[in-house]
Length: 162
Image (cartoon, rainbow, N blue to C red):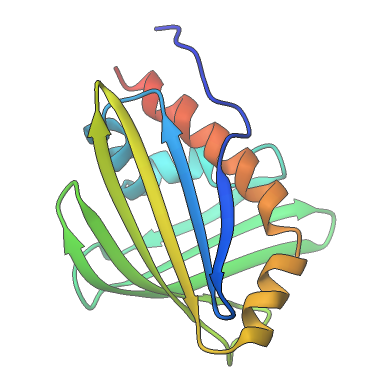
C-alpha cells in the first residue's frame, strides 16, 4: 500500500540540562507503529535508516528483559546500544535504559509513548541522561540527523504493515 510519509519531521527540544525530547507524528495507526518499534525483525528494517545496516537486534521484551542493537554505518564503523526494559504498557508506553557501547559508563532512561488520533500516531521520546555532559555528547554526536532517517524508515515500515 502506498501512503504519504512525514520525512524529517521529528522535533527535538532540550527541556533541561540533562534531557532530550523527541516528538514525531507517523502516518500510521498506533498498533502498527508499536509493532514496527518492538518486533526485532521489523526493527532491523528501520533502525539504521539510510546510514547503514542493522547487524543485530536482540530483545527480551518484558520488564527486566535486556535489549541490544548493533549497526554497521561504514567500513569499520560499528555502533551498538543496549539496555533494560523497566516498564511496558502494551501499545502505550515503554521505559528502558539505553547505553551507547562506546560510552559504557553513561546511560539514559528513555520513556517512549505512543498516542493515536485520526489514524495517525504521535511518538514521544523523553531521554533522561544522568549528567549534562552526557546529554551534550549525545546531541553533539549528530544523533538528530541519524534519528530523522531512522524515524522516516520507521514510518515506512509501519505504514507498510497495513
